[in-house]
Length: 229
Image (tube, rainbow, N blue to C red; front, side, top):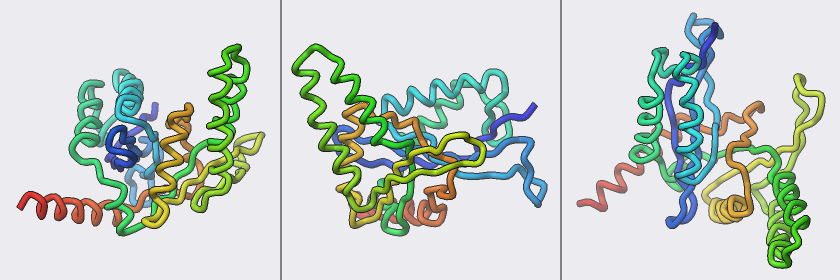
């Protein structure tokens, strides 16, 4: 029986100070998928984008797979408590600010279509008999327009070979120049019910550059040291 192995975690923190949200990347592999060197083949994927409470709630849900050995860390079995503690440490102490990452590379991540998610939310609101609730759709309409017209956000459709239907994708391409406008839209999407777990992993964009990650951490540490001096 194969198991999923997590090798490392990469957390990027972004959004407003009063309610930051986190991009959680994980380097992982399957125990029965071996590369040419005879080692477990690894890939890095975005697993979720959420505020702190929802992010850790998702980690707790995933940790259940540790009990039966279906999920391991570094090739070894781990208790759910240990798995949660490792992620909490990464989020609390090792998160890299998005701005510091973008000093060295752009960040390219994809979700299942946010427009489709928001349109589903709008239909549910319109079913309400409350005038106040129905009026909330105005904000959603404006957000959908901005998602479709803002530079750095692309609505596209992909047709994986293993699926019978095409999949609508929203792709965010963060750079130093557009990060604020994209973060503003993502924050508004979260407030309107965006599901940060609906990540589109199965495309050619891993999203994270290892080199930019490590250089960003060095840059961030230097900034902190200079402020403390």
